[in-house]
Image 1 (tube, one colour):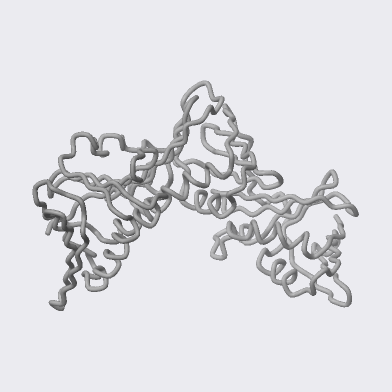
Image 2 (cartoon, rainbow, N blue to C red):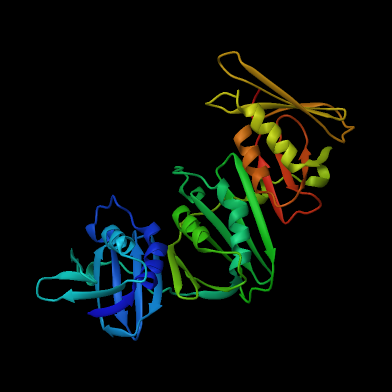
Length: 370
């Protein structure tokens, strides 16, 4: 195989796919990028055997073929070349090496046959729908922070996507907090679909998506999902497990007898200040809800204390309740509104946080024992 290409054109897809490449792999080929030239298109593919990311560019001077080369080294070479340099890539069939030339620079790289590279199987029994990438980005940005990290309950280490004919919903939880966001839109699917996308697939997708209203094509299969934006395609295996019935843990706002609305940023900053002296291990803060006043307090094993107060519009019964302050700060940092609505019942019941006057995204935080 052989092709000639501008350095900038080659570098862009390489930088897009490098996030999938794992440096500590049991299979050496997974540290490589698959380079494929075919039908006037050049494709760069990275995989960790669970998530695959491919970016394509058009190329004029090419001979068909494919090979895998060390990802980090190829990217470093392209980054080190001068701007607007011309790059020539050629596979030497006899020595099983790849040669990269640009001006007076010459590089020879080891290769691994393309047949050893794990490519994604065709998605069977798929259903397909289209969504604006900006809308999916919004759903992911509102929920991804609540995904678990390496939880033994493997189905929590990802993001639940529920697709119905009229709605797309994203859900994430780590067992202590919950984030739900929905988009009301005609999807075109005939039957409801529920899939759990693993954490790495979600993070790579979030990195790719922009706020542009460009169509994102999603194909959902039994064991995998494939998402295509223009010349970029992300494929991910799905987590095989049953996501918990999250609707049971979302408090009914109408049944909560303690409700207040307040400025989101003021509350977030108050919590940030108080958290400075919270326990490093438990991160607990005490919220005391009283007549027209919210008091936030924290302490730590060194007997240091922090207190802060905010004026609020509240005339209900007083309440003392404890929370992990990091969970509250994460939710408040994510909510897309200037004011938030907070719903509480008692010191042992979860707290519901929503954008003011809206319920299209909801955040639930479990209380902690004081």
